[in-house]
Each structure stands twice: as C-alpha cells, then as structure tokens.
Image (cartoon, rainbow, N blue to C red; front, side):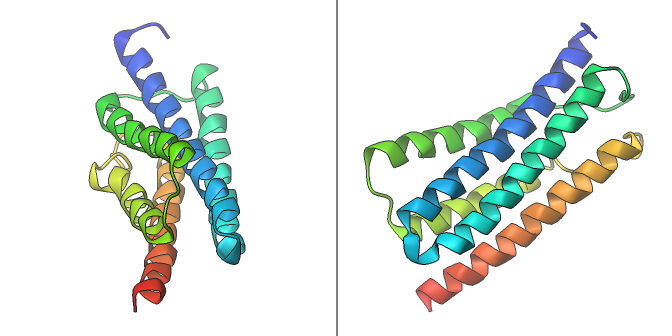
Length: 157
C-alpha cells in the first residue's frame, strides 16, 4: 500500500476523518460558548463525532487491505483547503469572542463546502462500503445544513 495512489487515498480518508473531528470540536465549543443553545450544538457535535468514527473504521478496513479502490481519483487538496479553514476558525475561537451569528454562518459554509467540492460524489466503481459511507456523510451534511439554516432563520427573522 505504498503506491502514490494508495498514499493519496489514505491522505484523503484521513482528511475526511479529521474534517469530521474538527467539526465535532467546533460544535462542542459552541455548546459551551452559547449555553442557551447548548443542546442544539451538542446534538450536532455528537453526530459529527459519529461520522469521524465511521470514517476511522473505514480507514482501518482500507489499511488492512479489506477494501480497495479501482479507478477512483482522490484530490486531497480539496479536503486540505477546507480543513485549513476549520483550523483557522478554531484558532480564531481561541483568541476572540465569536458572535452567535458568525458561528452559525461559518457552520453553514463548513457543512456545505465538501459537498460543493464533490468530495462525497459517489462513483460507479467505488466499493459498496465506501458508497454507504459517502451516502451517510452526505445525508449528515444535508441534515446538519438544514438544522443550522433553520436556526439561522430563527435568529435573523
């Protein structure tokens, strides 16, 4: 599993896991920052943590050689760019107070970014396990976006 394709695949899967985990960390921080909306953010954080663990299990199966890809071209740069935005926002959260509206707006963009970059686009040749994972992650992003957008509308009338 040392081929360039295999290493890029592993980087992408690791990036996906890290993206999910970073969202979990951000939403967990929101639950502390905005106690009046604690359960809203905690619920989404728990789901992001579940997504992170799902990707981690898939990554283990890939590392063990139980799942392989043929014909799939992964672009780590897409995930890397979006993960950098999450990390930058996490850094900002440590140095300044983030208003609720900014937190919500950032979350909407974060939930939409990988979908727009088609990271979760299912390819015909993808292994069934990966198709299932992508469907679950995509459903999670869509659900989170809808919840957060509804919350945004409540905040902004």
